[in-house]
Image 1 (cartoon, one colour):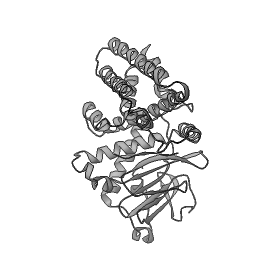
Image 2 (cartoon, helix red, strand yellow; image 1 turned 60 degrees about the vertical axis):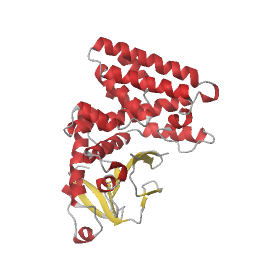
Image 3 (cartoon, helix red, strand yellow; image 1 turned 135 degrees about the horizontal axis):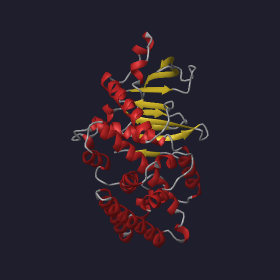
Length: 334
């Protein structure tokens, strides 16, 4: 199961290339420099904001309009058909190649080389890889042509997806759920929106929750913020009790998983944007974009609220269990 987002130490800075590698199809120097900054940003967000210990980068498949760069820090052989390199003191294999418009993934799947980024499990769910278009592809997209902070936006997207590489247990559970569902297509992070969004009452209630979450985040006083957090919690539970009954009962868990995953990953992207020099208000606006995707909009607001009220929440999110965003909000609101 893949959830696709549409919208590194500078590891390449530490590689020693042979003449053959240098002559192969390679992304631009500008994109490589951007990657250096992006992985450096991830290495700050990971320990300081997400409170995660140091770890190897996941298998990354990155591409522009012509070339693919694969880096696999887990491999110390020429498994990828490329070269062995020393990357910040550890060995890895790297391969540069030309693509024909289709990207081959570590799990054997294939994807078109468009404006995409996503993380997914492979190796029977034991590992997670990360695939994304490099900034050159995003800059060429007509929908992003007027975005003045495109480099920061894509950097935040990368940090978002790198956060998802710590969500193997969520991916595994979503795969189980997807197999159990009948007649459900495009099972991704906006599935609740697609399934229930045409119901005017449901949509109105969800929009009210987002508005309440935003009010809570923007409220200065801790006591008032907790009060609004309790109101938000009651509103979410009331909507779920009204709509997720009978055959629809399973959608409560689905919503909860996607809110948790997208919320914490979007929060990490928001923190990367702040570290890139944006104010908190501008970073929030950049990450939330138009607010077109419910799970990402409500999810990041809830985690912004949780972060302001519940110190150490990261330990619960990344302890190997499938923590519920609702349980975190309950703890924050107490």
